Length: 319
Ligand SMILES: C[S@@+](CC[C@H](N)C(=O)[O-])C[C@H]1O[C@@H](n2cnc3c(N)ncnc32)[C@H](O)[C@@H]1O
Image 1 (cartoon, rainbow, N blue to C red):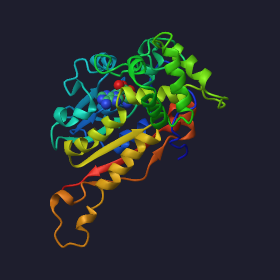
Image 2: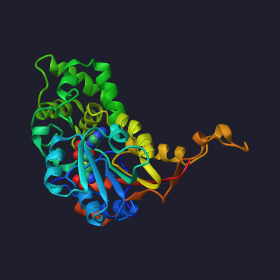
Image 3: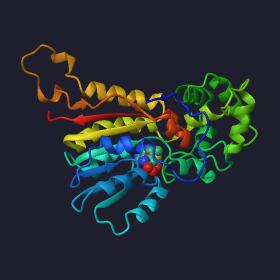
Image 4: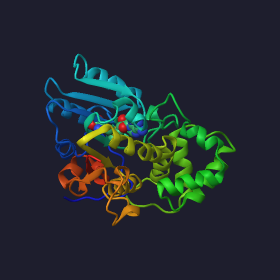
């Protein structure tokens, strides 16, 4: 396997259809039983969900979750008349509520933003397409990127861009944003991309100067890291013993949370090390399955977004 989680893709993916990243590896890792219950916590346009359905028999069940209204529309088409499948428009940080405890044989998270979200200028995710500066996966809740940039103080903007974009010019960019908004609110992706490009000295080859800033704002607006932190323990509680947790991340900030969660969950609480009796709550709840998996060169050639993908798998064990 080659490739590495290198933080930010060099370019945004092009093309209309969303190709599910690490499709076969993820589906195989779920170890699907025809009569099992599976959860796709990030339905997107249903690439992975369709594969799961294809492996289920009449008794199998699929619960698909996504916070995006366009994912809901895609699910209505994909699941039309299929009584095995149910779509829930929700945040995956409510997964336990929607799935229930000890209910699932496998749960998949394919994190981040989908290619159709990026490709649609009206959603405001992309510096390559001019549109309203929105960036919310769920446009019906929370604060848009334009609103954040209109009201946040310079220091908060710089912190977001530095931490979530790992952008070394964050302070300059925040200063430029605050200067620019004094002469009119920054309401379009095109204007923001221009402000950032003018503020950043020099150019990294193959990367638009606004790449890291757009990534940071998207992660902030959607509270992407907080969502993962809250969802993972719930996902484990929603799994039956023997059930698989499969997570595909696209940058190091996400993967760090997933890696640490799976490692900690697969070890006994060190407080009880060496004691003859370990309380159930302190015993490991997970067993790691294999090592991190990356996309190979042929997948990366077909889908540049796969370059940053890393998949980790763990199995729920009885407490
Ligand atoms: C990378 S795409 C998934 C693509 C999908 N596997 C497919 O094959 O089409 C990620 C999806 O997860 C959704 N998403 C991201 N964070 C979410 C959250 N916290 N709650 C619910 N959905 C979320 C996004 O709206 C997006 O549609």
